[in-house]
Length: 132
Image (cartoon, rainbow, N blue to C red; front, top):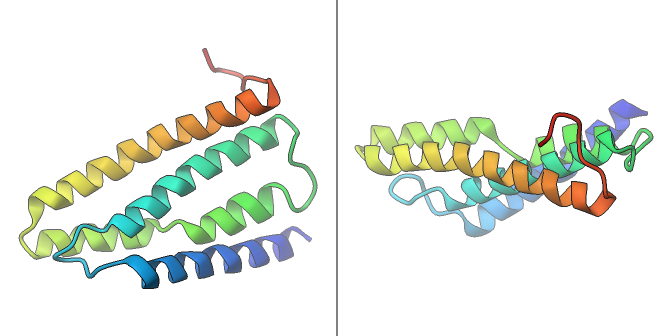
């Protein structure tokens, strides 16, 4: 059942990413990869919220974590395309935008994850262990 949940979620997430990328992305280089940046930031937020809800036992069963985190969010986000776009910017001599993209993606992802976890915590009224 978990495998089916991951397959379905991954298919939906990857398809959503593809549709967004095809609809809004401009070629990298020369353009900054805003669509991938947005997808990965939203994914970091959502993954932290989902894992917080799983830890609080709000999401249970075969469709909670496998479908949403590994499947949907895993299929939606893209580490590999983030790296390829960074390399393309560097290869085109756009080192400044590449460094900004790398740093903003990592910092933005961490901030988005923290916000997602905090939102889920406030929605459940529980704080995860290890949080101050």
